[in-house]
Image 1 (cartoon, one colour):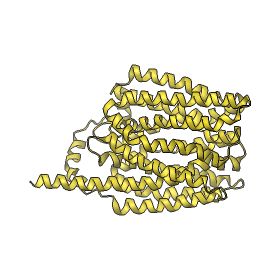
Image 2 (cartoon, helix red, strand yellow):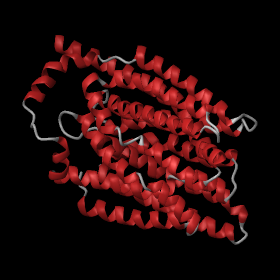
Image 3 (tube, helix red, strand yellow):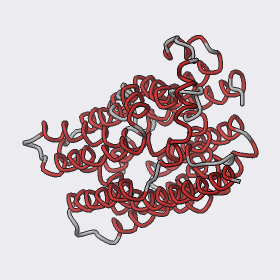
Image 4 (tube, helix red, strand yellow):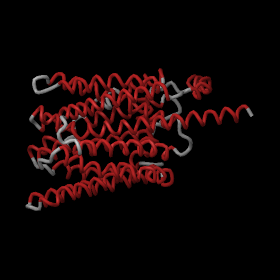
Length: 410
């Protein structure tokens, strides 16, 4: 009877934690969507160079991955709640430095990007583990609820950018700072880890009897872990060639305004929100491999539409551009919602212990794969053609689909 009571109590705590995480993701989505729309155009205005913008975007992306093994170790040691709380001041410091930077203070901008994306790394990874720890058997559904909240907030952020044409970009950064402060309050006072204390002895015994072999070696020796590592590294390299400079390219090549870019993106976020929960259920039923294949196919369609729209635009049919990009982003939303649950279920369940460190190792190697993508994408646009990155990414996605069929297993 006592065990039953304890089980019900734990269930209630976990439900409250999921609710707190949903609220945090909702407001974070509002701030992050504003930032994502204005970030690359903001860099382009300061640097006046698509190449340098690509380098800076790559720097930020690298900071999302390279510190991951250390972040994972830290998270395993001090706990996911403590680590996610620690992410907030780092996040805000990065935004402050970006806020005060200009063409005469590039060093502030560089250091701000490093700190901002380090804060993102600490925040995002521990957020995923908190969802995993507080989920039952339907992890796909729980991740979908969290990302439903995030995309709902993103719609609000995009709409705010659209209806705030006269507001300076830096004001969006200030709003995001305020949102991060509220997030910190939620993480500090509304997340509970009481239910974990009962498993402390069990985890200690598990660690005492675990293999002493280094995790790095396990990834290269174990066929399953090796396939996971190769796929996610290949995936981020292929997509990174195009997305590392995508919004900057829209501004530089088509001369789209921030409002127009936000209008395009908001349709993707609406689709993400509407279909995120059904996609989670689909992931639970179809399995991770089929969901990832479906994600790759819809991603390929996104790039094909971008290529066709650009060809039509360059031949004088300029009226097709924004409608085509809207359709492309709606389709790409299906790539996102079928990818995210599968990705997070896989990466938060690598091994029985040291899961955060395992997650960190995969993310680190993915980061190494991402390093050259911004530079490659910018060089291809400036020296070959605007469509060159999209063509290469499309070919890469076909390779990805082949890899999933041949080497990936549920």
